[in-house]
Length: 114
Image 1: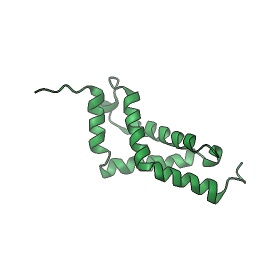
Image 2 (image 1 turned 90 degrees about the vertical axis):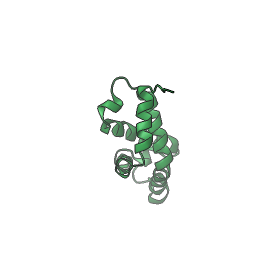
Image 3 (image 1 turned 135 degrees about the vertical axis):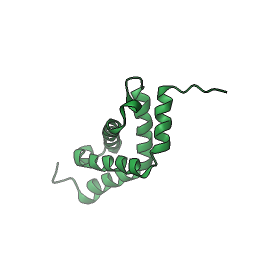
């Protein structure tokens, strides 16, 4: 029996197998952490979901730019690929993002910065 795999499926299968690879996983984690430098939690007081979404979408875009062209080339549906990476990032690093937000907003305080 032959299976036909679309380019989108190939890209997602490739990532599904490799996102837990230590090097790729750490790269994505580093990109998420770097996003903390560019997304200020105090600008999102009372809007944690928007903060998390902005951090993750910025990380997804940066991470996707590091992938080989063959994987993200013109034949790939970027919406599906980005959505897959978004879900993975949210599942794996959502707690890290939430902890950063809570620390800055509730423990460190935003009064001086507003």
